[in-house]
Length: 357
Image (tube, rainbow, N blue to C red; front, side, top):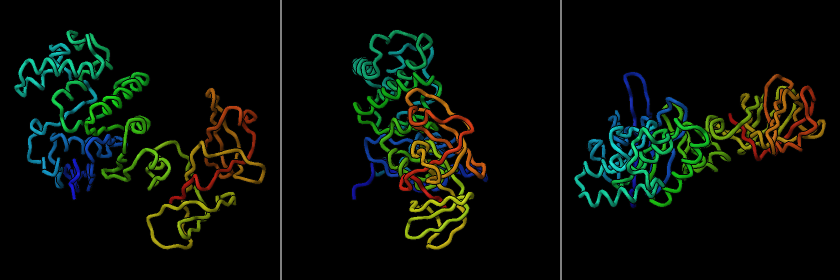
């Protein structure tokens, strides 16, 4: 069997009694854009820094092209790195910043000049070579940092929350550029973010981190439509979680009774225990866009708390009979008749929801 291009095997990182990374394993093919997604403190950056060689894992291994790199110092791993802060040398101009890693490696000046030209063209900063970092915008500085990280043609590029210091519009513009650069270079990218929208926009696959472990790995579409755990369901996309008073599950499908007596059947079941039969109360996850208005007595009775107009769509905040709040996203015309304090029923296709036990 051909080994994976990059392999993380049973990685564990502890700091005293604190477990920052707990048995993380991943197989990453060459050329993939893989994002580590999770909240602060979930272990994603610690895993990335182990790859870069900035911290030595407590146990486990990291293999590149079949060989362990743990004993290789960080400056000899030939891995590119882009940080949240641009870390450009303020006393060097753009050309000198981009050419720096090549000069450190003793490349001939003619080769350095050619490569710098190529990198500046790649990040669309032709003509900016003589500018100092202090005279560039935040987005331009991050492009220079990206050009510098790619200048020596590393096999892997690591990016640690590189866009979090930029405003929303600029983040979206640079995200498009990063995707384009990935397509044009084919470099393997491991990208850390806590922004689910950014992860969905950029990635081939996403590894969802929580409490030092990976809960699920898959494409954005897989994670959104088929979340394996309650955490993944809550972290990828918008979600409503409805408490169930009674649950019965059999053969991978479940039937729930909500606290007001409303019953919904044929729900896909996700659980950690084996076997069928009567199970304790659980939660039904349903996306806001899956909810729709139903006729009286044909769905879950709710009261409207608020309606927010957002142009072509609107959102509606509801409260159930037992006091739980949920919300719906729909076309503005579809819910034009709703207003606060109106009572109505909402329903959804059970196949588009998930029962977590």
